[in-house]
Image 1 (spheres, rainbow, N blue to C red):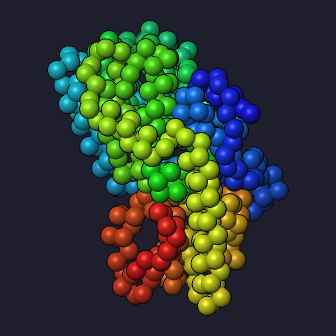
Image 2 (cartoon, protein in one colour):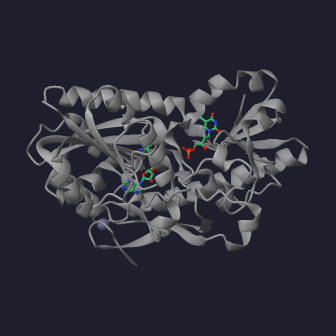
Image 3 (cartoon, helix red, strand yellow):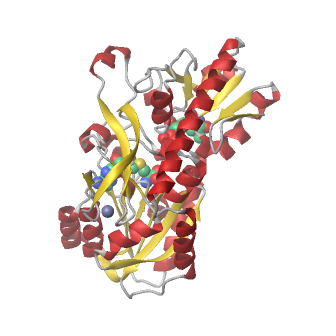
Length: 406
Ligand code: SAH
Ligand code: TMP
Ligand code: ZN
């Protein structure tokens, strides 16, 4: 039994993925000996509905001056955040001198839109290397971990915010009560919080088990987010499903009673009941689906190998660390992984040590198959890789089902 980080109730693990390294811990061969591993296991709390990691590595092992994830590597995500920013601008346009804050602002992919529009903004980004890129681009950024204490300091210096934004970061923070309390402190009485993260409903429906890795300590649902914010005098007033990261949910939050609750919130709560997100047996079935997905993927890769065909991994995503380690995929099955991020190139994938190489290697010598680790960017990638497909290249995918495309 474990203690829930949200409601303090007890809960049990429903799946373990075994020993796992840091998902973004791309490393050099001389570092193989000192690689850090922990047990990646997940549980479901029946009281508040939160799905969470049993153990999470220390945050300084994940977010630091060598953080490998730069948000702006995806042009699709740039467009996504431009549209997200426009939605917030609509909400604050009546305000005089509005102030917008973002938690986990990374290289400024979202806030650059506010900087351009000359709207007062502040980003909180603890990973110094990505924060530096934002600062160099004229985006106001503090390189620290956001929590209740920092919220008090920000309030004293900058005042309260009209809008607080966060994307793909709330689900990273185990001490989330402190973050949400920080929001309560910083949010104006009529202010709005909008944040989005991978959605539990999509993960369960499509067996997206690679969304489970060290950084994602929580998998949120409308039920668990409602419970969490309710503890801090706030409530969900709208929910807007997103296609990003294989299926995400955008939650719109306000102080209790400050705004009208949309019918969409009620509908989504109903949908979660139908999906059985409140029932332990749903997670037992998920575990079976995960095991089947793993077995099918490994079999497919072995069959291709037997035929003497080449397989290259497409994009060294954080999520691929769970796939590679849980399925035991090494360079025996995947020759190398092509990735466009310079600091990943020349290194090896965490745990199973598949070489990561620059995209030019792929472009200049197509393999027969590409294993699509970055399925969440598939629209962008399919548009870019017409030539690969025209020359007979095929995609191996495992989402929502294991199979070959093209
Ligand atoms: N919002 C961006 C980045 C997501 S990655 C996007 O959606 O693309 C998560 C980011 O949150 C990382 O840059 C990480 O350094 C940052 N982060 C982690 N813990 C944090 C905390 N406690 N406060 C603020 N940012 C945090
Ligand atoms: P993420 O899924 O963890 O966000 O990581 C995305 C990774 O995918 C990042 O390292 C860049 C890489 N990538 C490519 O190599 N080629 C592409 O076309 C895209 C969209 C991403
Ligand atoms: Zn709980």
